[in-house]
Image 1 (cartoon, rainbow, N blue to C red):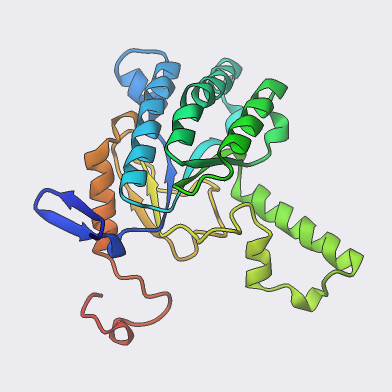
Image 2: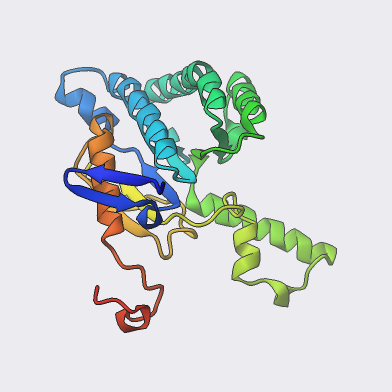
Amino acid sequence: MASTLEQGSQIVEKSLLPSHVAIIMDGNGRWAQQRGKPRVMGHRSGIASVRAVIESSARKQIDVLTLFAFSSENWRRPQDEVGLLMKLFIEAIQSEGKKLHENRVRLRVIGDVSAFSQPLQDQIAEIETLTQNNDGLLVNIAANYGGHWEIIQAVRQLADQVKSGEIDVADINNELITKSLALGDVVPPDLFIRTGGEQRISNFLLWHLAYTELYFTDTLWPDFDDDAYDLALECFAGRQRRFGRIAEQLGSDKV
Protein backbone atom coordinates (compact mmCIF):
# COMPACT_ATOMS: atom_id res chain seq x y z
CA MET A 1 0.00 0.00 0.00
CA ALA A 2 1.33 3.43 -0.90
CA SER A 3 2.53 5.57 1.97
CA THR A 4 0.24 8.51 2.71
CA LEU A 5 0.27 11.61 4.85
CA GLU A 6 -2.96 12.45 6.64
CA GLN A 7 -3.56 16.07 7.60
CA GLY A 8 -7.10 16.67 8.79
CA SER A 9 -9.28 15.48 5.91
CA GLN A 10 -6.39 15.67 3.45
CA ILE A 11 -4.54 12.56 2.30
CA VAL A 12 -1.30 13.03 0.40
CA GLU A 13 0.11 10.13 -1.60
CA LYS A 14 3.74 9.16 -1.24
CA SER A 15 4.36 10.18 -4.86
CA LEU A 16 3.48 13.78 -3.92
CA LEU A 17 5.84 13.91 -0.95
CA PRO A 18 9.38 15.26 -1.25
CA SER A 19 12.26 12.84 -1.55
CA HIS A 20 14.67 15.25 0.15
CA VAL A 21 13.72 17.79 2.83
CA ALA A 22 16.15 20.46 4.07
CA ILE A 23 15.42 22.44 7.24
CA ILE A 24 16.86 25.51 8.94
CA MET A 25 15.91 24.93 12.57
CA ASP A 26 15.50 28.53 13.70
CA GLY A 27 13.97 30.05 16.81
CA ASN A 28 15.44 28.07 19.71
CA GLY A 29 16.84 31.12 21.49
CA ARG A 30 13.71 33.20 21.05
CA TRP A 31 11.56 30.29 22.25
CA ALA A 32 13.52 30.24 25.51
CA GLN A 33 13.57 34.02 25.91
CA GLN A 34 9.78 34.20 25.50
CA ARG A 35 9.59 31.89 28.52
CA GLY A 36 12.13 33.79 30.59
CA LYS A 37 14.72 31.03 30.25
CA PRO A 38 18.37 31.05 29.10
CA ARG A 39 18.82 30.58 25.36
CA VAL A 40 20.48 27.21 25.89
CA MET A 41 17.18 25.83 27.20
CA GLY A 42 15.71 26.51 23.78
CA HIS A 43 18.49 24.55 22.14
CA ARG A 44 17.89 21.65 24.54
CA SER A 45 14.17 21.71 23.72
CA GLY A 46 15.03 21.86 20.03
CA ILE A 47 16.70 18.45 20.25
CA ALA A 48 13.29 16.90 20.87
CA SER A 49 12.04 18.47 17.64
CA VAL A 50 15.04 17.05 15.78
CA ARG A 51 14.18 13.60 17.09
CA ALA A 52 10.53 14.03 16.11
CA VAL A 53 11.22 15.23 12.56
CA ILE A 54 13.65 12.36 11.97
CA GLU A 55 11.10 9.83 13.20
CA SER A 56 8.33 11.44 11.14
CA SER A 57 10.48 11.54 7.99
CA ALA A 58 11.34 7.86 8.39
CA ARG A 59 7.66 6.93 8.82
CA LYS A 60 6.73 8.89 5.70
CA GLN A 61 9.51 7.14 3.72
CA ILE A 62 11.27 10.39 2.90
CA ASP A 63 14.71 9.45 1.59
CA VAL A 64 16.94 12.31 2.75
CA LEU A 65 16.68 14.87 5.55
CA THR A 66 19.27 17.65 5.82
CA LEU A 67 19.29 19.74 9.00
CA PHE A 68 21.21 22.99 9.48
CA ALA A 69 22.59 22.62 13.01
CA PHE A 70 25.48 25.11 13.16
CA SER A 71 26.59 27.51 10.47
CA SER A 72 30.10 28.75 9.84
CA GLU A 73 28.80 32.18 10.92
CA ASN A 74 27.50 30.91 14.28
CA TRP A 75 31.01 31.13 15.75
CA ARG A 76 30.25 34.87 16.07
CA ARG A 77 27.72 34.16 18.81
CA PRO A 78 28.68 34.63 22.49
CA GLN A 79 31.36 32.11 23.39
CA ASP A 80 29.40 30.63 26.28
CA GLU A 81 26.50 29.85 23.92
CA VAL A 82 28.84 28.33 21.33
CA GLY A 83 30.43 26.17 24.03
CA LEU A 84 27.05 24.94 25.21
CA LEU A 85 26.02 24.17 21.63
CA MET A 86 29.12 22.03 21.17
CA LYS A 87 28.37 20.22 24.43
CA LEU A 88 24.78 19.60 23.33
CA PHE A 89 26.01 18.29 20.00
CA ILE A 90 28.13 15.66 21.74
CA GLU A 91 25.32 14.76 24.13
CA ALA A 92 22.83 14.40 21.29
CA ILE A 93 25.10 12.08 19.31
CA GLN A 94 25.78 9.96 22.39
CA SER A 95 22.12 9.70 23.39
CA GLU A 96 20.60 9.24 19.93
CA GLY A 97 23.24 7.30 18.03
CA LYS A 98 22.24 3.79 19.07
CA LYS A 99 18.54 4.44 18.43
CA LEU A 100 19.27 5.86 14.97
CA HIS A 101 21.29 2.78 14.14
CA GLU A 102 18.57 0.42 15.37
CA ASN A 103 16.10 2.20 13.07
CA ARG A 104 18.41 1.87 10.04
CA VAL A 105 19.01 5.62 9.86
CA ARG A 106 22.31 6.66 8.26
CA LEU A 107 23.81 9.82 9.73
CA ARG A 108 26.61 11.95 8.41
CA VAL A 109 27.90 15.43 9.11
CA ILE A 110 28.65 17.88 6.31
CA GLY A 111 30.83 20.89 7.03
CA ASP A 112 34.34 21.68 8.22
CA VAL A 113 34.49 19.41 11.26
CA SER A 114 38.22 20.11 11.69
CA ALA A 115 37.28 23.24 13.65
CA PHE A 116 35.58 21.17 16.35
CA SER A 117 37.23 19.75 19.45
CA GLN A 118 38.81 16.33 19.12
CA PRO A 119 36.19 14.65 21.35
CA LEU A 120 33.42 16.00 19.10
CA GLN A 121 35.28 14.92 15.96
CA ASP A 122 35.65 11.44 17.48
CA GLN A 123 31.93 11.26 18.28
CA ILE A 124 31.04 12.30 14.73
CA ALA A 125 33.38 9.70 13.22
CA GLU A 126 31.97 7.01 15.51
CA ILE A 127 28.30 7.60 14.64
CA GLU A 128 29.08 7.93 10.92
CA THR A 129 30.95 4.61 10.99
CA LEU A 130 28.25 2.90 13.03
CA THR A 131 25.45 3.89 10.64
CA GLN A 132 27.27 4.01 7.28
CA ASN A 133 25.76 0.78 5.93
CA ASN A 134 22.18 1.48 7.02
CA ASP A 135 19.61 1.53 4.22
CA GLY A 136 16.92 3.73 5.77
CA LEU A 137 16.57 7.50 6.01
CA LEU A 138 19.77 9.45 5.33
CA VAL A 139 20.17 12.33 7.79
CA ASN A 140 22.73 14.99 6.93
CA ILE A 141 23.68 17.30 9.79
CA ALA A 142 25.18 20.55 8.48
CA ALA A 143 27.62 21.68 11.17
CA ASN A 144 30.22 24.42 10.75
CA TYR A 145 28.75 24.52 7.28
CA GLY A 146 28.17 27.36 4.83
CA GLY A 147 27.06 27.34 1.22
CA HIS A 148 29.99 29.54 0.19
CA TRP A 149 32.41 27.19 1.97
CA GLU A 150 30.94 24.16 0.18
CA ILE A 151 31.25 25.76 -3.27
CA ILE A 152 34.81 26.94 -2.54
CA GLN A 153 35.80 23.38 -1.57
CA ALA A 154 34.35 22.08 -4.83
CA VAL A 155 36.17 24.74 -6.88
CA ARG A 156 39.47 23.89 -5.18
CA GLN A 157 38.94 20.19 -5.82
CA LEU A 158 38.23 20.77 -9.50
CA ALA A 159 41.19 23.15 -9.78
CA ASP A 160 43.46 20.43 -8.39
CA GLN A 161 42.08 17.96 -10.92
CA VAL A 162 42.76 20.40 -13.77
CA LYS A 163 46.27 21.02 -12.45
CA SER A 164 47.00 17.29 -12.25
CA GLY A 165 45.63 16.71 -15.74
CA GLU A 166 42.74 14.51 -14.58
CA ILE A 167 40.25 16.81 -16.28
CA ASP A 168 40.30 19.71 -18.72
CA VAL A 169 38.81 23.11 -17.93
CA ALA A 170 36.28 22.49 -20.70
CA ASP A 171 35.05 19.38 -18.83
CA ILE A 172 33.71 21.44 -15.93
CA ASN A 173 29.92 21.54 -16.09
CA ASN A 174 26.87 21.48 -13.85
CA GLU A 175 27.11 17.75 -13.21
CA LEU A 176 30.80 17.78 -12.35
CA ILE A 177 30.42 20.68 -9.93
CA THR A 178 27.45 18.99 -8.26
CA LYS A 179 29.39 15.76 -7.76
CA SER A 180 32.19 17.73 -6.10
CA LEU A 181 29.88 19.15 -3.43
CA ALA A 182 29.24 17.72 0.03
CA LEU A 183 25.76 16.59 -1.05
CA GLY A 184 26.76 15.65 -4.56
CA ASP A 185 25.67 12.05 -4.09
CA VAL A 186 22.00 12.76 -3.32
CA VAL A 187 19.16 14.46 -5.15
CA PRO A 188 18.80 18.20 -4.43
CA PRO A 189 16.23 19.15 -1.78
CA ASP A 190 12.66 19.13 -3.07
CA LEU A 191 11.44 21.11 -0.07
CA PHE A 192 13.23 23.69 2.08
CA ILE A 193 11.66 24.59 5.43
CA ARG A 194 12.71 27.44 7.69
CA THR A 195 11.10 27.85 11.08
CA GLY A 196 11.14 30.93 13.30
CA GLY A 197 9.63 33.55 10.99
CA GLU A 198 12.72 34.64 9.05
CA GLN A 199 12.49 34.42 5.27
CA ARG A 200 16.00 33.86 3.95
CA ILE A 201 18.20 30.87 3.23
CA SER A 202 21.20 32.11 5.26
CA ASN A 203 24.04 30.62 3.21
CA PHE A 204 22.48 27.14 3.34
CA LEU A 205 22.82 24.76 0.35
CA LEU A 206 23.22 27.64 -2.10
CA TRP A 207 23.97 25.46 -5.12
CA HIS A 208 21.36 22.82 -4.30
CA LEU A 209 18.35 25.09 -3.71
CA ALA A 210 18.15 26.36 -7.31
CA TYR A 211 14.75 24.72 -7.94
CA THR A 212 13.73 23.81 -4.40
CA GLU A 213 10.28 24.76 -3.11
CA LEU A 214 10.65 27.19 -0.19
CA TYR A 215 8.41 27.09 2.87
CA PHE A 216 8.64 29.58 5.73
CA THR A 217 6.73 29.33 9.00
CA ASP A 218 6.52 31.54 12.10
CA THR A 219 6.57 28.42 14.28
CA LEU A 220 9.68 28.38 16.46
CA TRP A 221 11.74 25.22 16.14
CA PRO A 222 10.95 23.71 19.59
CA ASP A 223 7.24 23.98 18.68
CA PHE A 224 7.68 22.39 15.24
CA ASP A 225 5.72 19.19 15.81
CA ASP A 226 4.15 16.56 13.54
CA ASP A 227 1.20 18.81 12.70
CA ALA A 228 3.51 21.66 11.66
CA TYR A 229 5.59 19.27 9.56
CA ASP A 230 2.50 17.79 7.93
CA LEU A 231 1.30 21.29 7.04
CA ALA A 232 4.58 21.99 5.23
CA LEU A 233 4.40 18.68 3.38
CA GLU A 234 0.77 19.29 2.42
CA CYS A 235 1.72 22.72 1.05
CA PHE A 236 4.49 21.12 -1.00
CA ALA A 237 2.12 18.49 -2.39
CA GLY A 238 -0.13 21.26 -3.71
CA ARG A 239 2.61 23.00 -5.68
CA GLN A 240 3.57 22.47 -9.29
CA ARG A 241 7.27 22.16 -10.03
CA ARG A 242 7.89 23.34 -13.58
CA PHE A 243 11.71 23.59 -13.75
CA GLY A 244 11.54 26.34 -16.37
CA ARG A 245 8.62 24.93 -18.34
CA ILE A 246 5.05 26.26 -18.49
CA ALA A 247 2.00 24.65 -16.96
CA GLU A 248 0.57 23.53 -20.31
CA GLN A 249 3.69 21.42 -20.98
CA LEU A 250 3.00 19.49 -17.80
CA GLY A 251 -0.60 18.69 -18.68
CA SER A 252 -2.00 20.41 -15.62
CA ASP A 253 -4.16 23.41 -14.94
CA LYS A 254 -2.07 24.41 -11.90
CA VAL A 255 -0.21 27.70 -12.26
